[in-house]
Image (cartoon, rainbow, N blue to C red; front, side, top):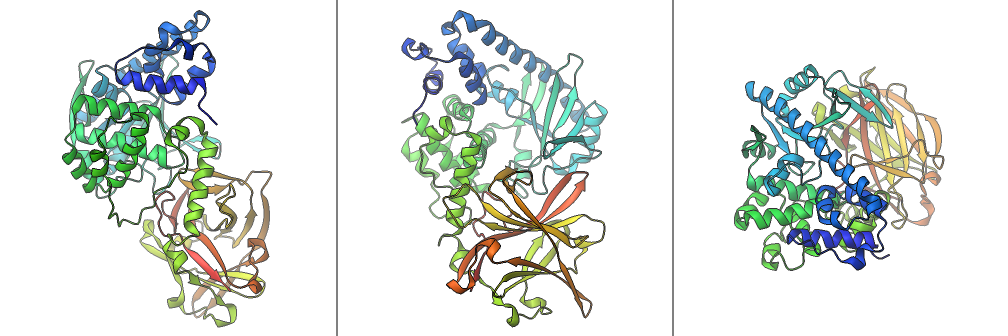
Length: 539
């Protein structure tokens, strides 16, 4: 596939806008689908900038549409600024940190006004210890928190994270008198990249900027740049889609502030994002060739990165990924790369897999022989053992843990990573066990979806086939062991054909509220950075 005329025009705009040029080539605009063009510019989050670039060349029959879309953006920015003012005044009075990111503040920092950048919602960064106060403050000011799970949306009675390890809480929404809705995102980390011990330094690295005569707290200049780059990395190297706006922002930040690259590198090392920055700069250079000296890009090349993070090795160019991939294709390409990693020597567990013993060779009551899965939420450990015979693979789970308490609605999941590295699947088989009732199902699926960086089978897919089963609870000497039996044929294992390698994941889902579940433990703790995917050697 090659870039369409609309893609070419958007790329031309990005390069010329950076140079303050508006030399729109007539031969490019003659063959433009103007309805698709506006959607593409919005999708890539550059519409307000693109509108000013292209408005003199918009055919007369489309000018009203383009003008109205821009005016809607202006009106949205105005009422969001008013809401930011009210939030700032209240948190300032109570000495609570609420840092505004992206959108309007970044537009002011980079472009000197509130309207140049695309604005979706209001993004904030808070100290996690303040969430109860902030939740109460927001609800007192007309906000509600809405949790969206499997297509169902419902209001929550207390602040809930999107998942146990997620950087964001479910979004807060407020209906305005003019019929518009304010959407507020409250985050405690910068995705899965800057968190825990590092995020406190970000919360202290602030500056105050003035927007419409009100002082707004945001990140200082170096940390603003790191946040732009981190967001660009997250979107381009996970199951999201890369955003053209972020690379235009990077260009304009560098051009306007001429950063001290030694300082930026020092901060990148401090926050352990050196390699991520290198990836972003290489992608940036494909849009803006020769703008960044190779010496600067190489400065962020962490050849001795021993963090055990996994970085994707794309075969396609960044420009193609930016313009030619849709969300599903991006997911599938990532799945294929992750599978190739899981079943290769790059995966430590593939080089030294866990040898599954024959059923008659295991000692069920010897907990010391069990593998471990840490459960951070309860500072506890799940113990489990694997075994096999001529027909079945067995998982034995120790049930002497507080998170298996009656009524907690806890589910154990065993997922097997598809061994066909060329297929569109990641997990091919899933076993789900209701720990209250000791029953569950096995799912064989030819479809998958990505939910907040977790790979999930599509339970509602007509292509999925499910099979119910009942687990066995073994009790001996006050020890409870749950047995889960899986047919080898069902997971594509032939024990008589030599040994088989099978990458897998064990995880625990816990009900938080209504339909909201959190994955409170998983071997693949973060799908995008796990460098050690567990592997069984059977046979």
